[in-house]
Image (cartoon, rainbow, N blue to C red; front, side):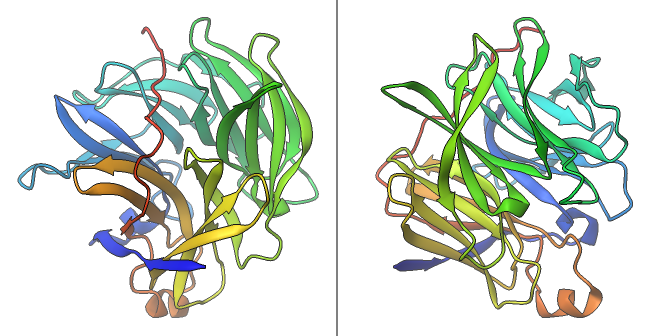
Length: 325
């Protein structure tokens, strides 16, 4: 199996910036292409996080840092640039990154449990719906407090798709002769589960396990589509290892096809493919979340953002949310 070592792309000075970066996306701000991500929270007890944008084509541009009114689980680009749909704690809001303005809440999840907050999300092809999940901040595998939701921006409706999860993470969509397929990770299960998604009916019917990742080191976290019937899964490894991993799997066979490693950073959170002038690159966010001091010393690159080369000739075209506010 081919193994490619990623290199540090963004190294943070402040420890809080390394805590929990996730969800990298491509966003145009003021006409400039940017790499956006969320830092879900700034430390283990923080009740707020940040939305950040880095401009890779402008060496003189400072990164944008937008404080969030809570803990952002995801930020998805909205058609037209500048704005992102952000899941913050239990609400969905729009942030105009260009001017730092936040909308009033568009919708609120029907869950008042203080332990659950919005986590990972993905845009349904076409941009007229979003699937997102929540996580139990105590990661209680018996309580199963987290849920999976569908959001439609046209009417700002949120509908429950699935319950009894623990930490809803990576999501990918595909289509086959039976319709739209949602692949979803509930991290502690170490599985990628297949659902038959019907946006009009607002339902997701379970359709078996696509990938059993129980033989992999670490826990599956974020996931991205490669556009060829395979996906890249980031693995959050709570133990000490010399390097973290993101692995590409065939959805048809379950076989591991290749891997990318992140030296000095074992807790890989999310993968993201982007086409650049010099080829398709893989962006990997990593985290220092939960690291005791002795482990943090052994992992000098924990919380850095990495970049790696790939052999893909192309990658899926980014989707944008169709939000009209």
